[in-house]
Length: 359
Image (cartoon, rainbow, N blue to C red):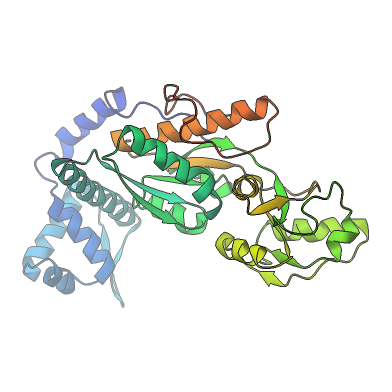
């Protein structure tokens, strides 16, 4: 995982950038240039770009020439399908969009502050962390900073990480996989967790002290889809033991659906340990006494490597680190994984960037 970020303001890199801006673009590069690059890439036509930006075609052509002069290279080339960006153009477009989003975000944040809010946090969260991590984090965040606005989006890494890369999200609570090692991201480990077998709290096996694999093989199951990384591990467990692999009655990636089916049936399911503990503590699930040899990626917090952290996002990261730290201390004391109450331990927030791991 990537280490702590280098200082983002006031360092030598910032001074060097100021010099480059003085020498090459200050007073020349305008938002209009950046808008043109974005629209040209979307339309592939100087005529369509001019119309979309409410300017004449000659004015758009001149604006493009100005941009190419500033960057010192050709940014677009003509092809049978219209204008296409050169490699230099692709880089310029990528950064242009980043700058335009940052400007838009700054306007939104200032408007929220003018309206009495203390900023906003756009959080992406994978389903297993909604109840066990995000809910507690929001309770604690709003207990201390009630006027922070939170926009939460639930999804998989495949959806959330591209949104983070496009700066449409400020932070992602997700599993740390190969995709989170991208240089565009900073990632920090929050916790590892086991995989548990669960049933409804009133299931005939809810109070069993021991189960064997043959009993599990003969049961009805809710399982992750065949494309989920956990699924082949689950099946291989039975194959290695020479036991028939159970065929699932339900296959789903939805924790909400799994919860609903478990509560209405005697089916078994495999779920992440903290999800199992959360629903057990709600009186909804029982965790069966069987140690599964399954592994899942750890849970972490992922941010954009090249974007400054606003005070509101910093507050959110503080409470997430605090919750993870409390869970770590519980594990060190030998406690089973369980959710942390928002009222527990009002210790000062941990530093946002001081460590790579909250464990």
